[in-house]
Length: 117
Image 1 (cartoon, rainbow, N blue to C red):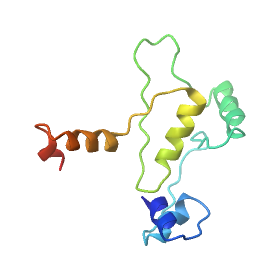
Image 2: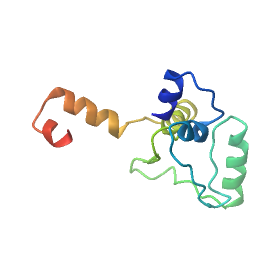
Image 3: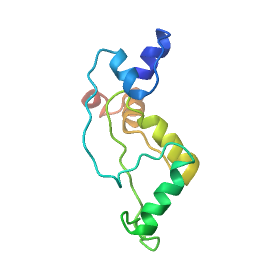
Image 4: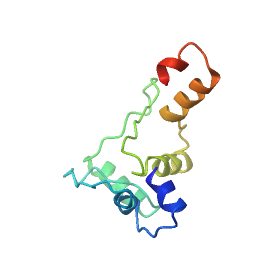
């Protein structure tokens, strides 16, 4: 990942975007919606709660028996792991990394190992 790259080379970066740029990749801005809030610090939680209270963001119903699933996507070094750690710590959700699950399955050498490779 970009963060591993900058750590290995002892580069100074200010955030995930600058880490990606340090690897030679271009970071592009994509316009989103104001309600698409990135919750990264405890200070962001009241803002998210206010968005929910205002009706701009509708949380899933608590009574839904189906499991709640969130897909965190992004390129290498984009902060997916950081966000997942935060979600696990703050919300108590479980985290399953598709990449890690695939690496484990490949390592076991089962019938799908060649397909994964």
